[in-house]
Picture 1: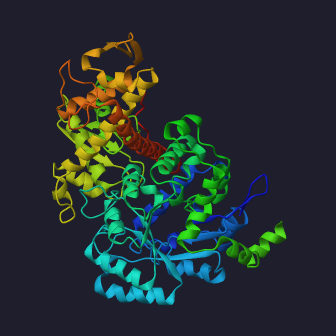
Picture 2: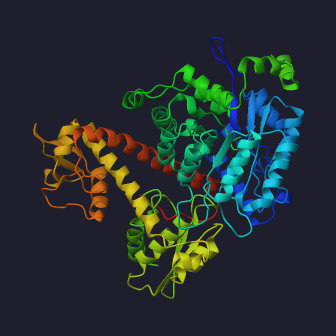
Picture 3: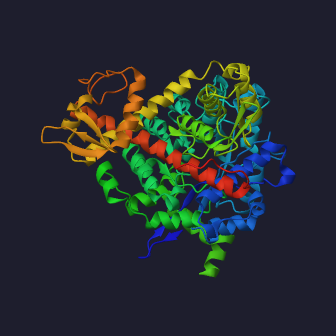
Length: 343
Length: 251
C-alpha cells in the first residue's frame, strides 16, 4: 500500500517477483554462474547505490529479506511469482513454482503463483502439467522461450505442441500467461527477441491474456505494434520501470509510447525483485511527471488515476482480485499485523 | 603495434556497428584489446552481457574480421569474445571463415543476411526520425520537410545549410549525415533532385503521411535508444564488478 501525501491509498500488485536460489552450491555449470552474474550487472547498473547488495546476498537471499523488501518497506500488497526454471543451469532450478510455493503457503493472500509449460515436454508433459495445476495453487503461467532443454535453445509460442498446452490452460481455467523472450531460440539465425509468435498465439487464443514481460524490450516497437492489434496483450513493466532513476527521460518516452499505443488499462507494474527493489521504483514512479514536451508530443499524461491502474488495478482485474475485499483481508494476515504494529 | 597502425585499426573498427543497436562497437566500448603478433591481429571484444545473442555476436565478429583483413601488415585477423556463453562456437566459426549455419549445425536454418537487413532497416528509420526531428526543431514545417531535395543541403563545417522557401536555416550536420549514409546503402534515388526523405520503398512522404510515419518511427527510436542505454549501463557494471582489461579509448 502506497499512501500519497494527501492520504490516498494506492493498492500495489508487483507483477514480477522472484525468490531465487543462485548460490554456488546450486550452480550446475558455468551457465548458472553466468546467469546470476548477468543479473547482478542489471542490479548494479540501475539500482541507486544504497540499494545495491553484495554479490553473495544477491545469489541467495532470505525469506525475511523478501518479506521486508516487498511488503514491509516496499509498498507491495501482492506479488506475482514469475517462476523461472533454468534446470540446465541450476541443479534445483532457479525459482521454480515448487520453491516459490513455500512462501505462497505461508502467506496465501500475498502471492500469486505462476507455473509453466514447455512444449518440448511433449505429450507426456500434458499429464505433468495437469498434475502441477492439481497439486499447486497455480493461477498463471510464466513462459520463458529461451530456456535450454536437451540441446535445444528455445521454442516459440506458435509451436503446435504449445497450442496443446494453451488448450489445456483453457480447460483448466488458467487465463494469464506471462511471456518473456530471451537471447537464444531456435532457429538461431532469427531475432530471438521477436514477439510475433505472441501476436499469433494471442489472436488464436483471444480468451487468454498474454502479459509480455519487460514490455518486449529490447523490441518495444514490435511489442507496441502487436499489442495494438490484440487487446488481450498486456505490458509488464519490469526492467523498464527500473530506468526511472538513471534515465527518467527514457522511462518517460517508454511510458508515453505505451500509453499512446495501448492505453492505460493494459500496463502492469513490475519490479523484477530481486533484480531491483520495489521501494525506490515505486517512490520515483509516484513522484514522476512526464516531461512537458513528451506530454505534448504524444498527447498523453501519467495522472494519479493512471498510476493507480498501473500499480494495481490492472493486475487485480486480470486475476479477479476485488481490491477492497482483499485490502481488508490483508490487514489481518501476519504481514498485515507486522505493518500495523510498525505504524 | 605502432601508433599509426593502431590508429588505422581504430578507424576501421569505428565503422563496425553493433547491428542491433546501430552504433559503433568502438563508441559502445566493446573493443577490449588489440594485439599484433607475427602479422596475426587479435581483436578482443567484450559484449554487455554473458548472454548477448549469438547471432549478433557472430555478425560483429565477422564484420571486425572483414574490416581488418585488408590492412597492410596483417596476415590474419582473429576475434576473441571475452566471457560469453557461446564464445568458443562463435569465434571458432568466424576465425575459420565458416558461415553461421556451419558454425551452429542443426540450430540455424540460414545465414544472417535477413537479420542484418532487418536491423539495417530499423536503423534507417531511427536515423531518419532523428534527421527529420533536427529539421523540425530548426523550425521547418512538415510541408517544407517533405519538399526538400538532396540538393537543398549544403555542408558547412559541422552544420548543414538547408535552403527553403522562407530563407535558409542551419542545422547540426551529424544526424543528417548519419541518415544520408544509411540512405545511400539502400539504392534509393540519389540524384540531386531526389527527395531527401523517402520511405524504404523509395516513396516520398506527404505532410499528412509523415505525421503517422513519425509516430511509428519515434517508437523505433525509443526502443533502440533505450536498448543502447541499457547495453552501455550493463557493460559499465560488468567492467566494474569483474574489473581487468582495458577498453580501447574512444573520443
